[in-house]
Amino acid sequence: MNFDWIKSRAVSHADKVAIIDPLKKTEWTYEDLNIRAENLAHHLVEQGVKKGDRIGVFAPNDVGVLDHLFAAIKIGAIFVPMNWRLKPREIKKVVEDSGMEYIVYGTNHLDRLDHIPKEYIKYNIDEAEYHEIVDPNHHEPFESIDIEPEDIAMLIYTSGTTGTPKGVIHTHQSYTNNIFNEVLSWNMHDEYVTIASAPMFHVVGFVDIVLPMLMVGGQTVLERYFNPETINDWISKYKPNILVMIPTMYYGIIADPEFSPEMIASVEKFVSGGSAPLPAVQEAFLKMGKVLVNAYGLTEAPLVTYNNNELAKRNPSSIGRPVLNLAHKIVDEEMNEVPIGEMGELLIRGLNVTPGYWNLPEEDDEVFYDGYFRTGDMAIENEAGELTIVNRLKELIITGGENVLPSEVEAILNKHPLVHSGVIVGYDNPRFGESVSAAIVLNEQAQGIENYEEVLDEYMVKNLAGYKTPKLYLVLEEIPVNSVGKPDQLEIQRMMNKKAAEVKEETI
Image 1 (cartoon, one colour):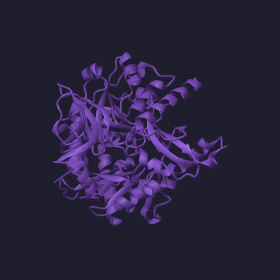
Image 2 (cartoon, helix red, strand yellow; image 1 turned 90 degrees about the vertical axis):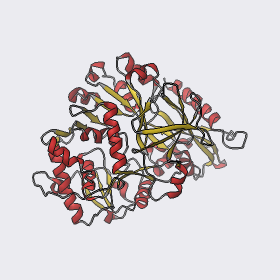
Image 3 (cartoon, rainbow, N blue to C red; image 1 turned 180 degrees about the vertical axis):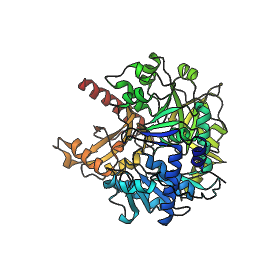
Image 4 (spheres, helix red, strand yellow; image 1 turned 60 degrees about the horizontal axis):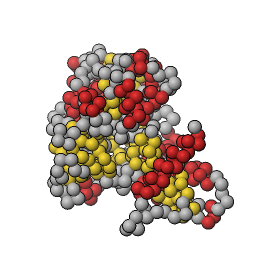
């Protein structure tokens, strides 16, 4: 079958500008994108890349990321967008797990690949060598191979619930069906313009906005890294009519001292996803006559539900109703469906849902039940079919749209000689939704050390991505436990939120 959709779009919208990169002062038409990908496909084949091989891209938002996806589709390779926020030890796990031996990178990111065999690292997508490979001023037409719907298109890595990276499989069928859902949900068409600010290693930034925009023939402005100091200037200049961002990015828009409502006048639809909504931000947008529309999804199923403007006004915490062609149910611990209005775990099934994890059949057995994917999120459905997420079965902390597994952070924290025991929990943060914190019992050798937080900070930052490290410490004589002798997460969170409030008051 033909899944080379960028080639088709290059025919229907040949001269339409598809991608604008303001920092590089470049723009590329749909025809350019296809030629770049065909030139790159020839190069990859010459380098020995073949169907099923994994191609890793370790770069910020850039046309080079798209080049490698489209080239991978043409040759049947598997595209792996890599999280450049991770530390070298974490990146090494992803590379080893995926078995990738072909990695490209962006400027300023090479140092984080120093745990990777040098022969795997091929070129910098920001340098002249790469530009010569893809330059659309010359064209080597490429005959795309036939692809089956169940062939793997991409692996997107998430820490999930185990603390080790898990490659979420998306087939050509699953990721394109997600795009179809996006297009239908947001009524997207070729007059749409967006700014891609969320990182393209994340489903929100990539599968939920950039790819749908390109598939319908719209226009995307690439923001290499989200910059709260310039985003409003870009919105004013490029006049997007749709934005898809995580809540903390919307916070950045309105927190700008120079912000005025006129800056966002062109935007017709604001979609908020990736983490729980921030009530204060939603309220601020409503006062301006704008509505943040919640969308709910997972790496394993990028778009599951969405709400419309009217629902968002009436019930801003709701995640809306399921998208088309997706079945769902809410179940109790015995997997029996619960009555309307009662809480249970949300299960989903649809063509946009991952078929499983890369080389993890045991994990697949745990997360699939009778054909349904277990989201691990506790939800309530009302009589109108509207869903609200109320809790998580999984212990994930979602901070600024990124997943953090407490056990992974605890494993690092508890190795430090100053720490007798430590428990990681999330605490409320009006900007990021949640932030990571640590309740700790110090060892005797920590007595008299006043700068223990600085010592622990330095140690944690060396071993984990910055967003995973604790932003608040609470020293206790002992860790509170519940009735079965386990750390009392709710009590620790209560104590941590209290301290966070006290710290905020002291700094005002």
